[in-house]
Length: 173
Image (tube, rainbow, N blue to C red; front, side):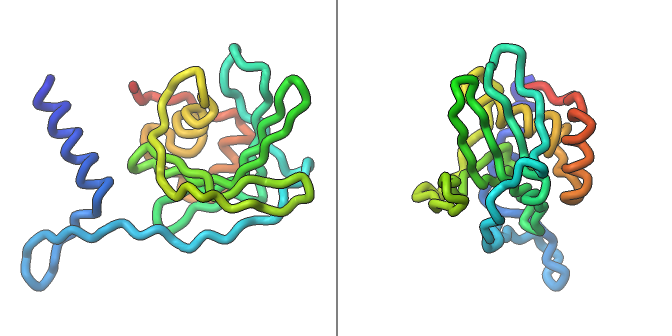
């Protein structure tokens, strides 16, 4: 079992640092570094475009993805606007990205009350963990955008899965 874990770890490390592809002229393999696409911030979310998604029975917050903001880039990143409504009345809006291949996420910008964006100073990708705090990221990963670790094909498929309430994951963490 530890050999399988070691092989999986090494594979994930290669994925995180670059993509291994065959060099047709040399018959060898070369590593190409992953390159993130340019990010364009969407319009502020409108209430009629918000799709709710289930996180867990233990949270009193309500979670939504703005359907019009969803995109699936050629770089393997699902981008979306996340809206979190707290039971106490607070509202958080953020434009985020999720990499299914590496089980990571990042925040590109935070929404302001006037509908504009404040870009994030942190450009690092963070691991997605299935824990009580920030469980909404694990829910999006496991049941909506990266079911079984595979990225949705396009924005329409992501919207459809959100409208259906997700797809139960078969992935074990």
